[in-house]
Length: 129
Image 1 (tube, rainbow, N blue to C red):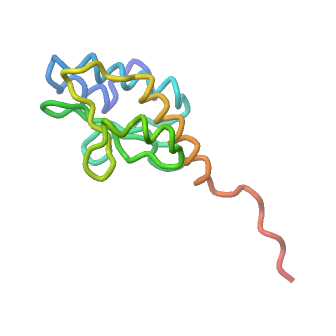
Image 2 (image 1 turned 90 degrees about the vertical axis):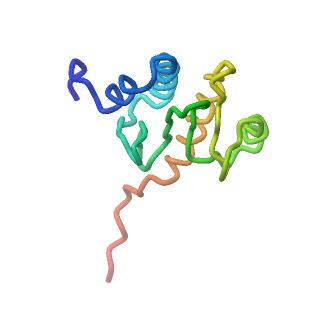
């Protein structure tokens, strides 16, 4: 990917309402910092980052920023995210409150743990006799 070429996520952010562009850029930078090797894509019409599978999606809505998919595997993190839980466990961060970027960073780190477990084994199968 040529860094001077606009990406689909650049276009998504540019098309977002001006009031949320900086927030979207901050979320993108937070995810990128935590998952530097992840590929930026648009999936289901939302900016997303892909590792071995989809790591995280984010999107701007009228009154909130959504972060997907739900977090699992870390009960303490899940308790901290409870005030932001939306339908089906997805996260909703209200635009009238500061966006908790460090909490989003922790979500990404947990998603990376789950993503690494998804990695296909590189070991060769034992020879058959």
